[in-house]
Image (tube, rainbow, N blue to C red; front, side, top):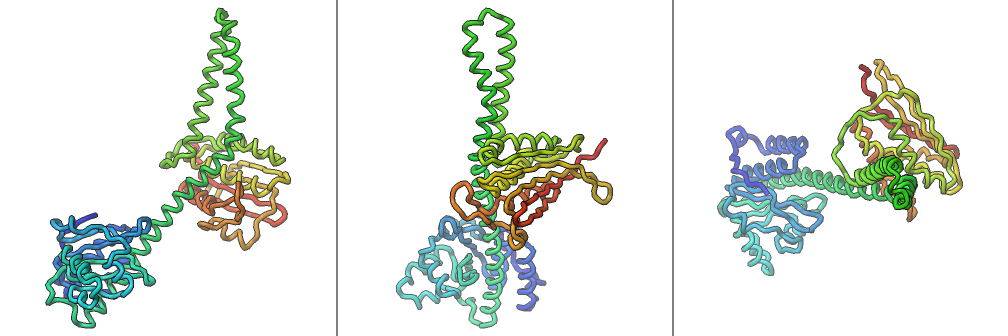
Length: 423
């Protein structure tokens, strides 16, 4: 919660007509994107419009079903008396259901809840509560404090205040919707990553089988060969390398499961592709899917976030395997060096499957958030954010992703990433 000194209206702002004031405020609401800045702008505007000395803005917390204090002006010594309001509170119920301002004078018209409402307003040193409604839903409300003889008695004043409140409500609702989408994407990103982890567990087990065999062999032979210094020296080195190999694998799994800020490093794309293919070999074999790879020699190196690009490739590879089902098929992975207009050099990864393909109607929505063609339960369940996240990661790498599909033939995803310039 933030408290700001009240920014009193300047001579130029007080000289504005109601229409000019509303136009300026609405334009501001359309350009601001920070929640705290929007809240402050709304509160100051409503204070100015009503010549209020102080005010407080409460915003809906959808997760906890309450309204929290997020901004005040000139209320430094009274914020302790301004708690959060549950959605069942009399003040909230009155504002949400009656859809109009509530003043100390008005509570006389609501006998059953008059004492509680009056006490609430007085505790906040307020004489007017202004609801900010969008689609008949209370998004936020503002408590304003000014002398009772200054209450808005004129229709024009109330109309202006209503219009300002509506514009502010629209802006805050957009911010809440954006925050909800961001939280959902974060949750779905974690869900998709954990689902992929479950599938690549088979590949992980396959990957560590060989180093575990060498370690087990050394442990079994060491008691008998403890005096053979050459054996102990050579086998110790092999075992230590295998332990480090297992540690690296575990760290890669942990990094993949845990969201990390992008860290761009100079990488060999062919090596990343090979690593991802190794993880899915067990699952592909179990479904009688043949994996083929055609990796270009001397492929230009790329600056990228290794874990994020692995997430992209694993998502596309696992989607391809899922699409082909249990009837077998062919999964082809190719890498290319391509040159675009302006002689810029890019790298390209193509992932081609022999699955049933994607219909044209679905193809144009394939990267839309929450769009999915996987509606069954189990391992084929889809969150509808996997390809959205893939698209976002590629965009953050200043790359491109395209998809071509023919029903009954298969689907090809192409990921293009800008290459590092050659010195």
